[in-house]
Length: 206
Ligand SMILES: [Zn+2]
Ligand SMILES: [Zn+2]
Image 1: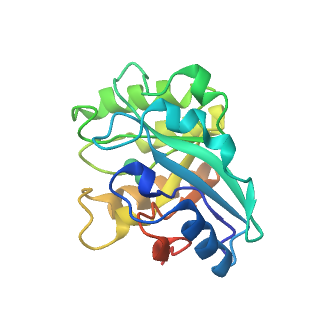
Image 2: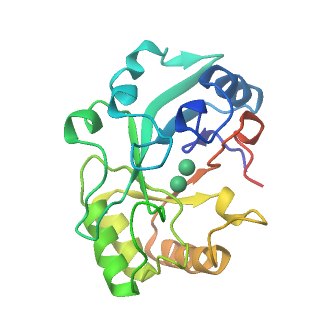
């Protein structure tokens, strides 16, 4: 399978990633990607940039080294009422918005609460992708989530970092097997992201 798009990458702007956007785009070009999304962490993560960082993304070219750049963000889901930590006037200017569960931003909860909360996030018209679903600390009813993806058009990510040995996310391989079985059954497409925090990881989806 030829990988053309990496929907999930971080730069030094995230506060705990170590390459610049120029280094990332160069790496994307060398890997043969056509499109790369820059999705730095939204303000809720310690060390992440303030909203002004996202307001000013216009200074970056939309194409570098023959690769199209989607200027985006990885927002934090901050409640089980569907809240995320970037305001609408920032979200509407971004090319792509991921929304993800991260432990510093939201407590763990039971499957029903997490599933219903995530469906509310998927109904937000500015959210394009759910980042790294499958961490069993945030348990999901995957049939409901896959059907919500089909209905809302919000895509589910298969995240390379979650599947790496040493990942701090729990039970992802088993969850994703379930998610992908429902995706196949209900004919729902998914997206692939590396969640690269260093340029050598861009486009690496092994
Ligand atoms: Zn994340
Ligand atoms: Zn990420």
